[in-house]
Amino acid sequence: MGTSKKIVVLTGAGISAESGLRTFRDADGLWENEPVRIVATPEGFESDPERVITFYNKLRNSLKNVEPNAAHHALVKLEEKYGDDFLLITQNVDDLHQRAGSKRVIAMHGELLKVRCLGHGEHVMYCTENQPEKCPECGAKMRPHIVWFGEIPFEMKRIQKALTQCDLFAYIGTSGVVYPAAGFRQMAKSSGAYVVCLNLEEVDGGYTDEFIQGKAGEIVPKWVEKLS
View 1: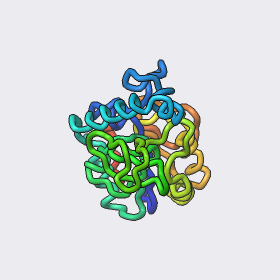
View 2 (view 1 turned 90 degrees about the horizontal axis):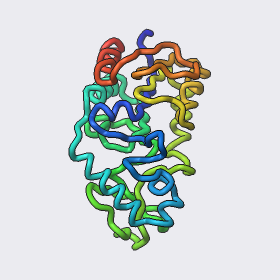
View 3 (view 1 turned 90 degrees about the vertical axis):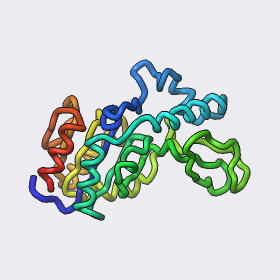
């Protein structure tokens, strides 16, 4: 693959797992030992907000114990080279990409370090520890700034536009089976992009030109070096 003018990268749980975070639900329907239907749905929040808030407070505080790894830092170098022609989309809700130095990031599933109110305008604010009970702006109830099951991921129009305009699309540390992200490689490929998968295991489903197997912290820096 030669030098590309526009690059879009999608990252998933695999890239954060190498830093010590489990960022996605287990096969038995649990997320950090809590039922997904309780802690990751609007209905769960409505029925037991205290339990949900406590859960996200714990996740938020766990970020203090982890650091970005080599894959995060490598993607920063790629962004520095390509500037506005680079876009990073992450399915993860941690802040490891941002801490590594990534600036052109879309956190499509939300961010642990943000909360928003349920009042007029849905005021969004940073929250590094425990979530406040009420919005300081309007007094409405607060909720984690996380996309739950049944909700639409953030900035989908911007994502779709980038995918149809990119020359290279890479998905890293993600199984590529959960929609809408599962459809990104098809969208990019159909628009003429070269598609690369960097993952521990090869992903089924086609629409991929190249598969690079291994741990993200080992293979992503080498891949970025080749592009540079």
